[in-house]
Length: 199
Image 1: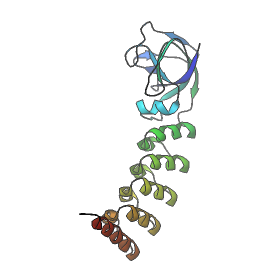
Image 2: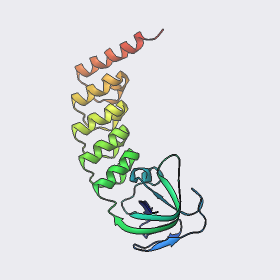
Image 3: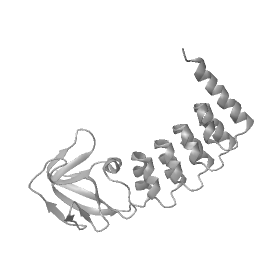
Image 4: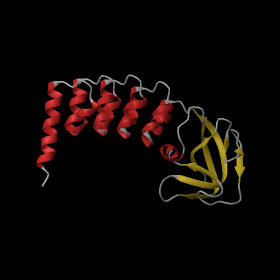
């Protein structure tokens, strides 16, 4: 039985000191999760929980056979036999989306990310907006929705974005330069609700 999945490599097609090539099959006698054998992931999203996104890394579709052991926590697997089937473009939008789903901060290493990638990144971690050049208002809104403190990384946020942030947490008013009267009033309203809840 064969199992298909994904494997990450350095830019020179090595992994843990072992050299790989497209189209070739490799074998190791010892197989133990996170210790011995050749590791891969059934799901691309899980790969980026273990590897940082790097635009120069190599990524490939692989086919495992022989002894295959899977983690009980995610799709991480280890195998005795693996064939490197085909290279996957690590800079494709599909791969970038999987990278930021697992770690919004991965956007730091993506040159000119699409708005779709930006939105997924800030939904995963609002603070990742600090790595996005000139984010759209929609991206800004999603960032402060996920974490109101993210407003500190937005240059000249619109009143709509400011209001979204202070409605979640009035204390972020201190992070906004020159807030309008409406934004200040909303912040005070939110803080008064908080203080009214205190015993």
